[in-house]
Length: 506
Image 1 (tube, rainbow, N blue to C red):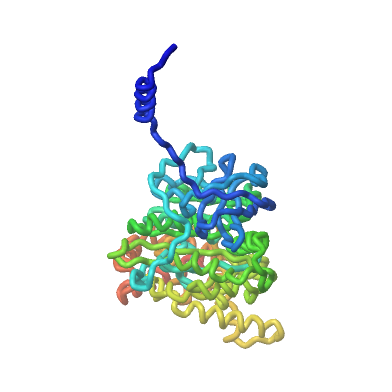
Image 2 (cartoon, helix red, strand yellow):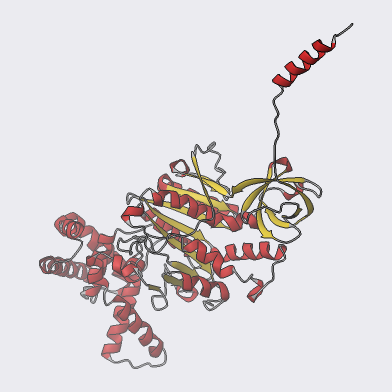
């Protein structure tokens, strides 16, 4: 076969025309060490802090250490799939999670992937998990209440939309119960909820989800879950993923409630990651930036001004204390970042006071400006009354002969504590709370025996709803107790109380 030179050149020219150069330029590095979910990579000089890296076998990592010789990354997947010598690619993307309405009613992991078996999430948008919090000028002061449905909180330690209220106490004192009741109480109140479970047992999270489903609260709730069986990096990023999902709704003008359960375990997961990355340990072996860890998370809760979207994120972080020590490292850090705390006491819990809230140590720094006038009117003196009761109680333990005024304070205080008891998963509307606290303020419970106080409370509320609905209607419309309404309420309460006490005597 003889090919002439001009034919050869024409064939080559044709081939050159059809040749499409496909060059893939990627910044790559090599794994030099992998252990305990941490990979050290050589050769990624341009990697960014918080950037996603792609490892072989579809494993991703998050850049956390930028050192002179190498990059330290935490693995967000199975570290067994990664070995020394593996090629690592930069993605040029900061860690992101899917956001949007498609996440409502779903249970997702820290990466925003569904784990509830209900199929894929049709989210169209993503957001980076790290973001600078809203500035001072884009915020608006807290003025709209976020009712928890729990009498003692809504009356003495109120929470407003856009606030950060810490729930703090020893283990098994009912911290999660308060958070779950608050989510259940948002039904029909145009408030989307996010529950972030950090370092909990799978079974515990499953119970919470089931309880929310039974109460019909999953229709407006997203659960972000990084359980104890998952790696420390996933537990570390879970709350940031949660607040990122919430920020999308806040930017649209929606009100969001987010629960971080709990930040003590979050700090521990960060300490684990930091020590594995060989960062220097500080107090209690925590790294020096553990304060910044929680401040950059909680500062993202805000109430935005209307020109910036007008939405809000209300945060209820939970902190677990050891033997009631609120002066420990992590509790003091988070107390200083938040706008108040709800302190739960083991002694009260064991004594049968549920919720076991210590009204003396608990405080809300901004929520009172968001309270409706009616509840302010009936709860103004409540905190002082409880403080007097606790003081008298501590003295009365040492004396047998008590004068009449001391006995009256102790008797009234015991009845108030009884009324402030509330069953789990049974939040009260704010107007029913007003009806309940009205009986305390005006001493209608004086002649009611302590054992009958709870029954008296439920019956008087039911009686007003049934026989005097105009009282409730005026409370709902005006959100305040006028002098005329107060007079008619006193008359109703007097008649009901007399009948109630008389029936007891028979």
